[in-house]
View: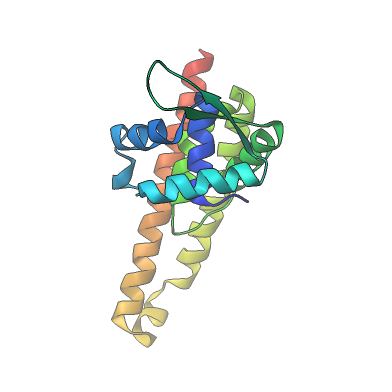
Length: 179
């Protein structure tokens, strides 16, 4: 599975071939820093690593009197690994929800049926997680553990409920596009 920065960059390059400078500007324009801050140095390092791994390929372009620039596109290997990372990211639940946020950002890479199936499976995973948390929380348990532990478990329940709400919202977009 790809790292979060690699997934984000492959998603941007997948939509449109870009050079490193354009990627940093696009990330800034999209206000990604508020939910996943990727420093410019990480963008450049990640691009070099993706190129070494054969997931992207660079083409040198000359534009007027400007210095040469390298524009990156996904290779077939990069496309496959990107798609697999998105699938895995949708079908897992982690309290660090950034990887799902990245996957949701690029979910339109999948056709409507595939997207709907993935989101329905995610919703089921989340509901099972919520059931597991709810089984743990009861008056006896709450009286036997520190109040901070109780508060944290309830916070985790809130996070799962938020993910259920967000996933349901994404799932609704599948139905809207089909109508």
